[in-house]
Image 1 (cartoon, one colour):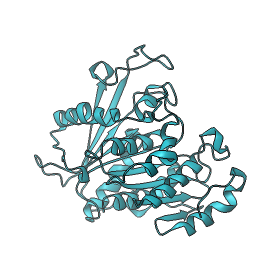
Image 2: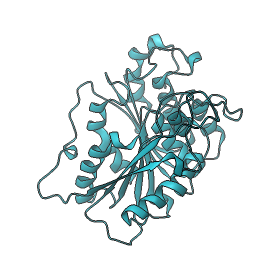
Image 3: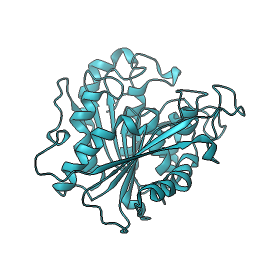
Image 4: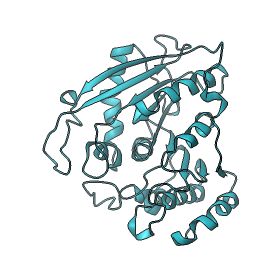
Length: 314
């Protein structure tokens, strides 16, 4: 039985509920050590990192907004970093992973992928680390990009980011949706799922840390009035199963851990319910509950990122 208890009962029930809920769910911690693949290893070929900046004036889809002032344009700059493995064959379409809030993950992803690719545990792949347009939560540019329930962000990546990466680096991207993944943390994780949910013909593999599957969307859309909370409240259960593979993580003391259901802002509750509805619908998923971990907790990321990457690429 999964968590549908008041928050006051959450900690007493959570580890037991996760452990009992099924083979796709697990609980780890409270002590964490970085996975061995998170350290550089002698003799392992190392990829390169290419970096460039995109001005908001170049974007047709996201020209920039002022906080809580739709229609008022405010310029911004967006950093993009691209990990290219040593094994990449020039001109050959390659699998890839888009990483939201990318620069926070760049070093972690490069090291993990160097090791995993060398050990042939994941495909040779490029990682495209994309910075947001800035700000956070409702009314911000980042919130507009990541928390909006539509295909727009995936379309932005497809029409503005990937062509620019190809222009800057020469990388050719696979068109096969099974060779395309998206990942992120917090609202960036919600964006990763939204990319695949609204465009499964483009993306089918999702990796989520502390996913913001809560009510963060702004402006409100009457089709999804509770924002990403709608995924576990309505959308997944009421929509024909999509060909997606989803890895989820949440921390015991993640954002809103002590808030009630009416707030629509309890990340632990939201992710637990995501796992529940994915299981009921028969999705390929894994859910990891991290004891004594916080929001997009660095120690939890270091402990799980290699195994998460390996799992989503199976």
